[in-house]
Amino acid sequence: MLCYTPCTNPPAATPLVEKKFNKKVEVVTDPGAFEGDRAQFTKWWIKLQIWVKANWDAFADNFEVATAVLSRLKGPVAGRYAQVRLQECYTAGVWPTWDDLKKEIEKYFKPQAERDWARQQIRSFKQGNMRTDDYITRFLALSIQGGLRNEHAVELLECNVNPHIAEQIYLQDARNENLALAAEEYILV
Image 1 (cartoon, one colour):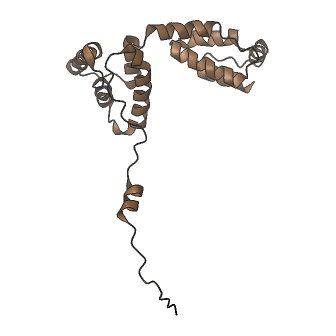
Image 2 (cartoon, one colour):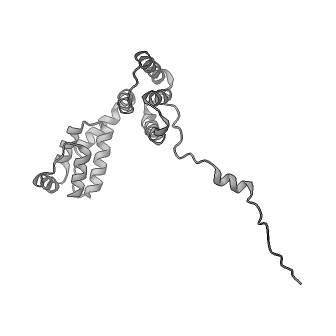
Image 3 (cartoon, one colour):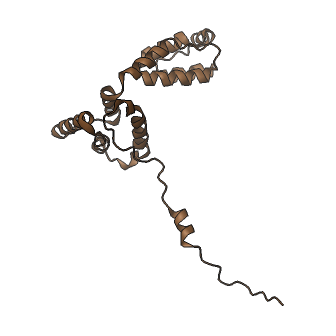
C-alpha cells in the first residue's frame, strides 16, 4: 500500500544552480595590451574600440578614456609613445577627446600597407550587378579601412555606383556631401 503525503516544503535550490544564474556575464572583455606588433594592431584596435564603447558610461571624462587607452600601449615603441603622450597631456592639463585620440593612434600605428591596399581597392570597386546594399556596405568598409576623407569617398561612390542609380540621385536632387547620408540615399533609390 502506497501512502502519499503532501509536500509542504519543496527542496531548496542547489547552490550550483544559483551560482550559474547569478554569475555576472562579461559581454566585452578587456582587449589587453598592444605590444607594438603592427601586424596585430587592427585586430587589437577593433577590440579596444568596442571595449571603450561598451564601457563608455564608466568613463567620467577625456582624462579617464585617454589614460585607459594609452595605458594599454606597451613595448619599446608603443609604450614609449604612450609614456610621452601621457606626460604631454598631464603637463598641459589637456586630454584628447576619444575621437581625436582614435585618429592620433591610427596615424601612428595602423599599418600603411592596409590603408594603401584599401585605397587601391576602392578606386576600382565598381558596383556592376551587385545588390546596392551589399555594394554600399563593402564600399563603406573600404573607405573606413583606407582612411578616406569624406569628400573624396563621396566622389568615388558617385563614380563607381551603378550609373542608373547615380542618375536618379542627381535627378531627385538627393546628392549629399556626407558619406553616411549619401550611402543611405543610394540604398533608398
